[in-house]
Length: 121
Image (cartoon, rainbow, N blue to C red; front, side, top):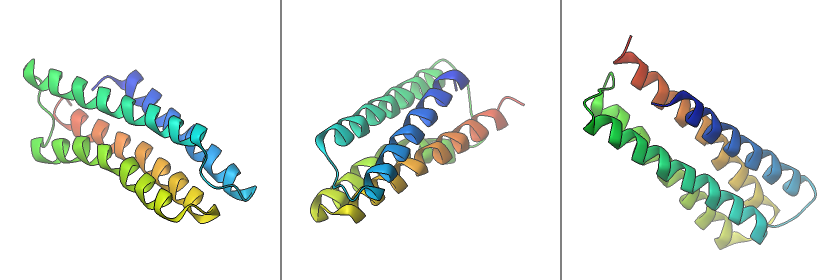
């Protein structure tokens, strides 16, 4: 994987998480701007999937193909599920749900990097 891009994805998700937690502390429901920011992070995750697939097509291999693909695809699901849950409730708590979903992304990105590095170490 491309380390710099993974860092950008993780930092972006962490910044959106902070935004969500600050909004929740202020008693705000998820607003349009926060949802747009989630969409931007999701686009970065789709790009990460594309990069990962291109590297696989190019002949590179991770430490565990199944685990690597599971994390790549799984990372795409977290934000839409969190957003669906948050939009179903629309409360201060739902803003916290979005923050927690965003915090899961850096963890997933780090695991993707670890799995990828295991095949190149």
